[in-house]
Image (tube, rainbow, N blue to C red; front, side):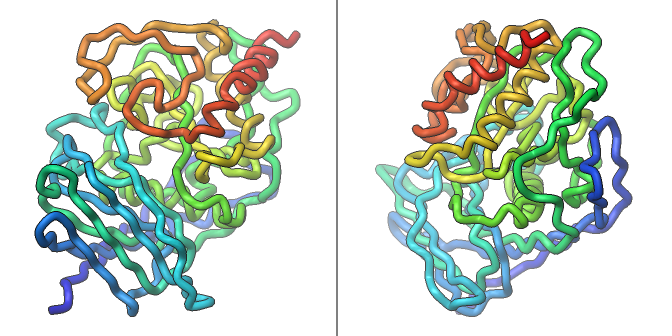
Length: 372
């Protein structure tokens, strides 16, 4: 029997650019109307499989389940077929995503989910899920996203504003950032008001755990896909990250609320308040993030931390706001001001290679923060 398929289309709305430095010569093209195709995965015994060789074109996917507190303890692998060549990709293992508690533990529609995977335009998909010592989570489903089209932003290393207005509390200039309007955020997906902390005490660095073979002209579409999956699949109120950086060093505004404010994101479960989450697009498990991306992470980190007088090379003690499987609610935990996701949560993120680059990122950020 063929599995039921559902397409969800986000309504269009007007977007507003607030407090973001626009890239010179780049204009937004409005919301790109992402579409989500949802397919139920029926478990049999200790596993679940699904294959469709005649699916509508999609570019990003994730697997989700009913209970946001559960993870896939066995294995979750996917492969896709490229629309243009008809060739199947290698199997990719997806981990579980963590970070949603700031959006409310009892939030309606909150789901557990895998890491998203950017596959590029694809017309076939195969999924296999295996359990380990317990039944698979209920409500398993595959979500496939067509991020829609919007005018591509300028690619290449990100430009940083020369002589831009610095913070009143810091001499660090504001890095140039692609606004939500420019990358085509669908604001109808995120009608709720943002939440804020008191300051930014630490930065958590992530990777999106997907292929590094993407073209930087696709980066805006990838960010749209992330927003769509974080809202439609995970049940969050917006994209979880505060900033997204591609391998060319271009910086994208993430969660709404103002790039210069302490927006509470959904990126590091238990430590989302008074922190900033920066995700680098790609998988940096065995491959270093390019210099351009590394530099952009350092610049964003320096700017955000220096606004509150914090040394990017220093340390801080944070209090866990919820049990996250590694730390318990109320536990005091010491972190570097610039830390990796794995320092706060049971994950390999941001990948072994990028995690190894954090000392250099801290040093670069500290040099920027102390420059005359």
